[in-house]
Every structure is written in structure tokens, then in C-alpha cells.
Length: 286
Image (cartoon, rainbow, N blue to C red; front, side):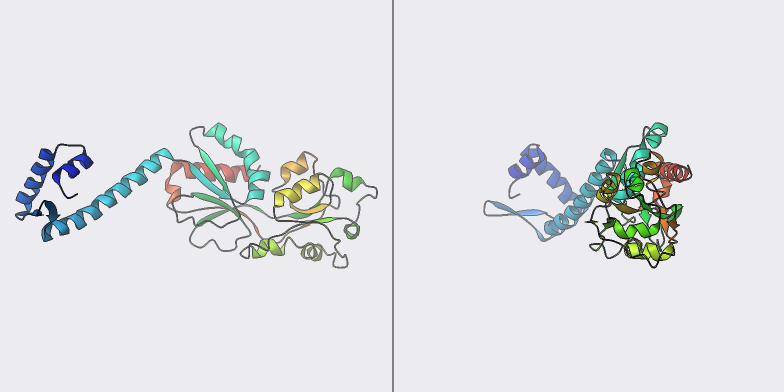
């Protein structure tokens, strides 16, 4: 600081109090910590070493206190989930969890990114099509069942949609995942030709249509009668049961991948994480 007065102003005490504290430290160390060069006060070699070591320690204490303060202020349960799963399946059911656990605040982090669960910030993730979860703890929510879904009006026609071959003459809505190279399995099963081959309709040539980078927009386009979408029956269950979407061919492909709730051993030590994982597993069985 250069003077006792500047140090006193920083600490909101009197210069005499600072001078007394410095004297006590020098008595404890048995060495002077500061000396005068003209009218300027500078650190001695021992003082400079003490300043370096103690400043590092105080910065660490400050960092630890800040983390504790943030944890106290933001003790939410953060759940990472892909946007289409969040809006079509998880969010409509979250009130059930809130009714059972009103004391637990949840932040739904909807993103296509695969978050690092080893970071304490995110406790739980709902993932689709990931084959290897590494050392994380994963529980299967449900297996994938992909069907060609459309609005009741489009299915009824004219012309009525009664055979898979009718897909050659109608708009097919597509989810464009080219910006996400990690989503290999998801991308593969969102190609219409892959689905047609899986259901034994290799001779059917898929028609054209609109591509969407946002799956939720593709779903809304299908609901409004603009075409067929390759839809996950488990995820779009609410749309189907409410009659917004139908499966006119009653055919599904089973790609052998599914939806998992994923967490870590450390996160499961928290009761709120255990409660959420147990709850979502029960919801998946309804």
C-alpha cells in the first residue's frame, strides 16, 4: 500500500491499528516486514515472501467462500436434456415431481450438447442414442419405437393414407442434425430411407419435404397437417393420446437404442438427485 494510512483506508481501521498489527507480525517472525525508502514504505525480503504466500492463501479462502455462497444461493437441481425430449415429454410431467417434492427447485437445461456430468453444476442428464456412458450411472427409461406420424386430417385425406407406399406422394418432414456430428445414431434413424428399410419397405422411395434444425418445429408442422414426421412414440405419447398425431400404418421400427437417465455416483449422494432419478424412472413406466 506504501503507507499505514492507505492500508488503514483499505481495511477500514485506523493507521495506528495497522501499525500495531504489523508490529505483532514482526515480533512473531523475528524479522522486519517493512522498511522506509525515503518517505515510501516498501516490503523487506521476508515481507515480500509473506505477502506472496499469504495472498495466495487468502485468494484460495476467498474462492472457497464464493463457491459456498453460490451453492447456498443456487441449490437448484440442474437437469440436462435434449430440447425435443424436454418439451414433448419431460416438461409436461414436471408438475408431478413438483407436487411430490415442492422443496426441490429444478432448472431444465435444454441443449443438444452432451454436458460433462463430472462438473458438479449439472447433476442429471436425459440422453438418447448414447451407446457408452463411460463410468456414469445410467438407467434405461424406454426403448425407441419410431413411427411415421401425421395429423388425423392428413391421414384421412383425400387421398387417405392407408399404405406405406403413400409416403411417396406426401411431404416428409426431416430433422437436420448435420451440425451435431456426435449424434451418429440419432442422425442415422432420422433418415426416412433407414426407417423404410427397417420396416421392410425398401421399394418405397421417400418423397421430398421440409428440413428443420429444431425437432419441435418439425413436430408442430406435422400437427398442422404439413406432412409426416418420424416420431418417437414414447416421447410423443401425449400428442398421440390427445389425437394430435396418428400412426395410420401402425408400423414401428425398433432401432435398438433408447432414452437413458444418467448421473454420477457423487451426484447420487444428494437426496434430491436420488428423488428425481427415482421419480423419472416411475414416470417412464406409466
